[in-house]
Length: 286
Image 1 (cartoon, rainbow, N blue to C red):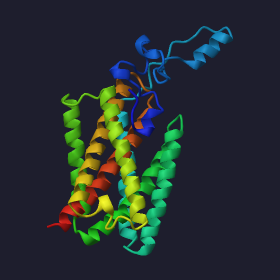
Image 2 (spheres, helix red, strand yellow):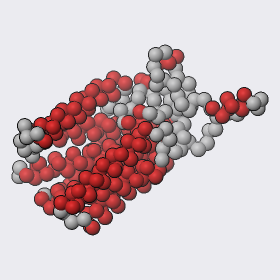
Image 3 (cartoon, one colour):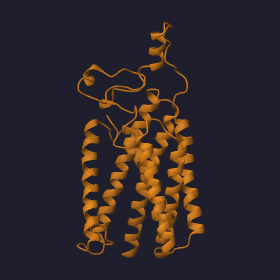
Image 4 (cartoon, rainbow, N blue to C red):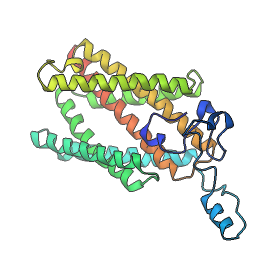
């Protein structure tokens, strides 16, 4: 199964129906007609080169593989960079038109860095941490903006994000959700439809057709849309957990833990932003 996360979808984190992985060749049942069934780590290109020059092929290395500790450390570094950027932006950039402009610029830079990393074949810690820093600046400014209108909203959003993450992990580890290929396809179809509807809504708002934010209003409809977005974030988390579990189980290289941290950060930022809007909506209706 290929991940919906653009970070993982180009990597070796593939497990068709849960049976293909890193140090194993693609199973015959999935190899035919499946461009993703090939495992990029199943063969050693350097061993092939050695055979060409007459040297005996060496066995694939079994060390330097990704572990849960690696994922935890890299995730802590990436999320910590986001937090530091957010705190500094909050402390140094007062709410103003200038800070909004800086936040918009930081968001664009973060998006560009994220896209570059997503299409790279190898993880780049500099790109990942750079993305985290600029994303932190963006989050810090918008969090301060929300806090100025709804006191305590960012703190509640952080707690909500932690609660969603913990609940999703609990449900995943308990086996109440089985991450299968069908599960991913259905979830991705819903996610794509959601993104397209939100894009159309943005255009309608920009051209004045939809008032008060349209589907993103601060009313009951906006709350329903926000809840759907958070549920989609939880869906992406289950895919992230699956890819990390597969990577560890099937011997992904250690540097892939940077991609695991990157993917988790993307998802957690999504959930936090949606949670921030949801807290604001409920606070406005009190």
